[in-house]
Image (cartoon, rainbow, N blue to C red; front, side, top):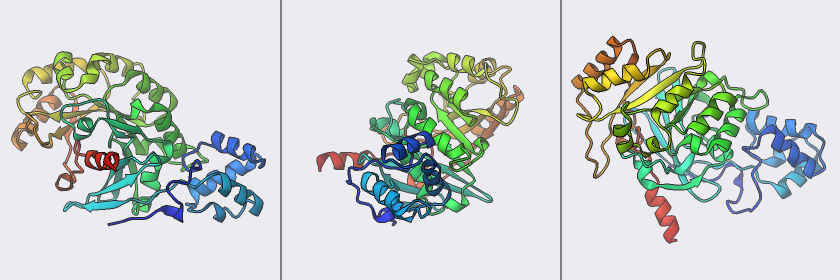
Length: 357
């Protein structure tokens, strides 16, 4: 169990957070307090490079500047409230957002690689039938600070090699904050990460996807799950607003021949989306697009009518797609015993308890 707050700040201070601000926003904050323009760069360095946990520790700012900042702003970091540890080494962390909502993230170590799966919303309004987060509904949008706090306050932060926006929520249903967090992660004045270390997943929200493709260089993962629009709409209501065919059409306008990659996530539902007809339609839909398909086992959720095929069927489906010329892998399930695997993250009970309080 982990608890407490980074920097010893009160939760309900009423002051806006510095953490999660872009360089432009920090410049505005500095100007508003009568500080020189270069103070914004100093603040960015303390926030994103030097791991500052207290505004008063920004010692290359004058004492008067630090006092002015501390009276008008809080730092904005929150330590995780709890951690659950899987027998496979995966850890699921619980965080409380600035607005009082709860989100979960999953830390997944794998040899020399360590990936953090972060949330972008408290809950989700996409309503995918195979997902616990979708059952929760949307409770709140995360700020860029809420998103990045899941990384900055992670006990294993120093071991991270990759981040994936595949936790709770649809990232491109919160595009402004997600894109700001990506800017902070990849900018020279921010964390300075290579975009190739980051993947953003989407169910196919086309306006947000277009912005992601134009305004960043991170990898893209599309939740596909069925190539037939009418069948996809039955399990993914987003299909009625943004057809997967339109999503693929948009992707074809961009170059994925270099370091940037696009992949398609495909939860395999036994007898529902794993037939030869699905293989044929997937090959037709993705023909000529440089991509890969990641097959994911369905993780059973209460009251669900779906089941995962056995290992033999998963391998047969993978091999059939591979024979069509599509690079296809079966993703290993991680953290299922602590409800941290794909589709299992949910803070519904905590949100409801907070409402009752």
